Image (cartoon, rainbow, N blue to C red; front, side):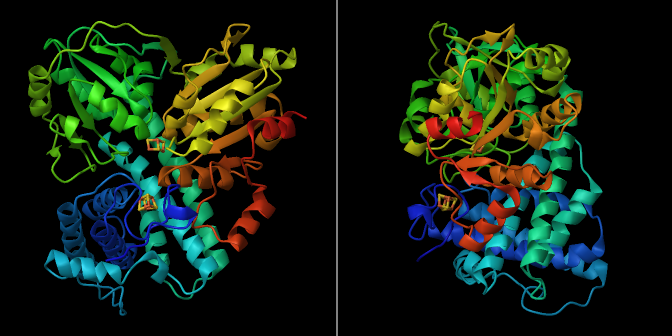
Length: 533
Ligand code: SF4
Ligand code: SF3
């Protein structure tokens, strides 16, 4: 059985995974994911006519997020989502009364797994359009929708939604099946996806800030404390909060991993004394780091990799993440994880280095006067946003070198998991302003945008005219949608690495270069020289 997937930066040979996924995705799961996406498009044809239906909208978000890189590797689970998708399509068809015909509208999955896989093989990404440039823009749109669904999922977990955004999800999914649409129609939908994602990231930012208070600069210990422990990795703050509540007084310390690091900056989470520190680095180091964490470990979003036997029995998944054979926690009762942590060996007392997080837009704009004065006095010459995903490629050392080589009179804003490449280095400060400011998770790109817009306001110029350069790293589809958001805001001159997406054709790339001057990273020295002159 063969497969084809090119949605992430790991795409084999820079073109696509066709035997098995570099991420660990097997051909049957790839086919089932393609099948599910086809089903979602079928559902959207009717949901787009129906208007808002809470059950359909929630399902659409969860199903899309399940197909993001490193989320759901369980064929049985994806098969269940396909069947649920069909039920909802029938519901939407009946409720909308819409008479639509054609193969997408008429989609019906088989009842058994093997046939569902075979059906999925007929709906691979290469079947999305005959024209390769249009196919490329459809792929960008689909990956943008996937990325946006992840942020919407977190917002929905905190009780937020937005009708306009949900209408866009259904409209855009339905549009991908419309043979009458051309290249510029899909370019327009990609830009609209970026714009809608700004709303979603804003929704999530408000949800985080209202629920847990605005982040404040907070030192985070990278060592361990004597006692039992649970390591939490992913992005979801609500899940962490529930776990903190359920472990109070139980003698268990909670550690963050990967994109959970910024959780330490939120007053509503840092108030728990047993949230003690951050363990390990970014997602791609899990197989090397998890064996060294003797307690229980839980994933609440991407990015899971094939677990080694050395820690599989103390590993748990929650939310949409699933791996066959790994215990999945449904709902909000974490007693199984807590009991496992109590059975596991204790961690040693081993205090470590402290790093700072918690520089969200409130914290940074709270000292905006100081920052603006430092720029006017020539103490800060340039800002760099060095942010995005981490990954396994050696080319990602560029980001470490870039941060290290950035001159002393520059400030580095960072976000997402790529910062683990340099967040333990000593950068010093400029008149009390730390030279490295950790804005937060990838979704906190919203904060970075707020900061950039406020600076542009203060200097009475546009964001493109600020002494600010964006040096971004990408891996999965959340980075794709953030890039679309930045482009939809008209932000130019973004440097992107470690390699350009396999799903972008030369013509589509030429369009992006012409309109946005987007460029691949070269070397840290060359790029710094080109930016600073
Ligand atoms: Fe390959 Fe990435 Fe697709 Fe996994 S998600 S199969 S690594 S392109
Ligand atoms: Fe990282 Fe997966 Fe993308 Fe949230 S966690 S940024 S890679």
